[in-house]
Structures are given as structure tokens and as C-alpha cells.
Length: 223
Picture 1 (tube, rainbow, N blue to C red):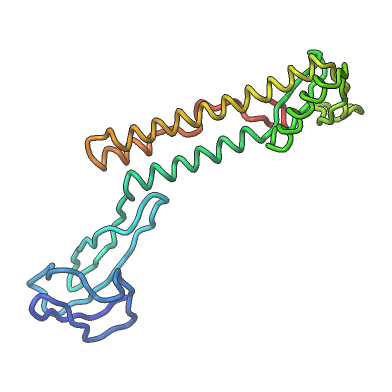
Picture 2: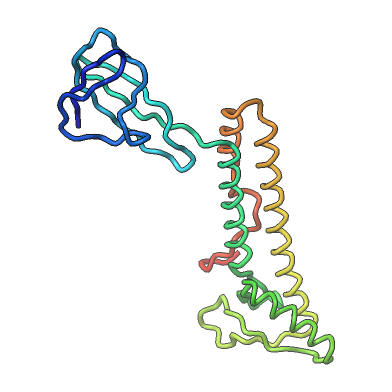
């Protein structure tokens, strides 16, 4: 997509146009005259694919024969913007692992999947309170068996076994929040501690958000 341009006192004037290519600001503005030796030339604009943390940068000019190409180069967003996006990614990782379930065995032989979403965690806490108040020695708790052939999705748990299950869930939640705090702290220190924006951006992109979390429960084989 080219347009024939004629320079006039350093500003381009369109004299023939096949198809107007939108440019930043909605108008033709390519700065000072890049090639004074060309009075009449074909002008093209190209763009490069932007990454998630990139935005449109400066136009960079190149010349081949009587064609001048202006390429919209990518530029990184600010460290503050990238850091904020990475923190949101870390929160999503926390929720995915924290709410994704936990493998638990009350007897060392039979393994079950405990639901660990917020509602399930609240129900476990409420049931602990009830058992303490009522003195009930055991409870049937609905869980998913890891053995597809098992016919008991509601094992009866003693008070001690149910408390062990509750503690395992709380440990998972604590580990997830601890790792989130570590990542958020690292991101904040990176943003304010780098010598310049370029160094900060590179350091942020080098952070491994996937590392350091509790192992995520997987249905195929479990934790």
C-alpha cells in the first residue's frame, strides 16, 4: 500500500494515493524530511507485531530506490505498567493453584481430592467449629476418590482426620499467599531499583512467575 508523495519545504504532500494507511494521530506526519535527494517518491508504512508488553514506538525510515518505507517500531510499555500486569498474572496463578484441589489421605491408603475453592474452605472451617461445639466424633465429608473404581465418595473422617485435612488446606492457602507476596515484592523492588527503564523492563521480563508455588493438583496422577 503506497502513496506517492512530494516534499515541499520539509513536509510531505500527497499527490497520488492508492490507499491511505492510518498513522498515529490520524494524519500524515512523518517528521522531518528523511531523504532530501528524493523530491518524488513512493511512501509506504509498515508495522511489526506488538508483544503483550509493547506499544507503538517511533517511525524508522529506510529507502530502496524511489521508495521510502516508514516502519512503526515497537516500544516497551513503562516498567510500572508491566509490573502491574505481572502482579495480576501472579494473582491468577495463586487462585488457580489455591482453588484447584488438594490430594488427601486419612489413612495412608485411600486418597481423595479435597475441594479447595473459597466456598469449600469456608465450609470446612464451619464444620470444624460445629464438631468442636457439638462433640461429634466423626463426619462424612464428600470428596472425589482418586480411584475410579472406589464406591465411597463420602468417607467418614474422625475429628483428628478432619482436622488434618483442614490443616492441609490451610497450609496450601498460606503457601500460595506467601509466594504471591514474594513475587509482588520482587516486582516492586525491580521497578524502583533498576538503573533505568530499559534495565527494569528486562529484569521484569526475566522474572519466572511459575516458579516457587505449591505443586498444582493434577487429576492424572495427582499431586
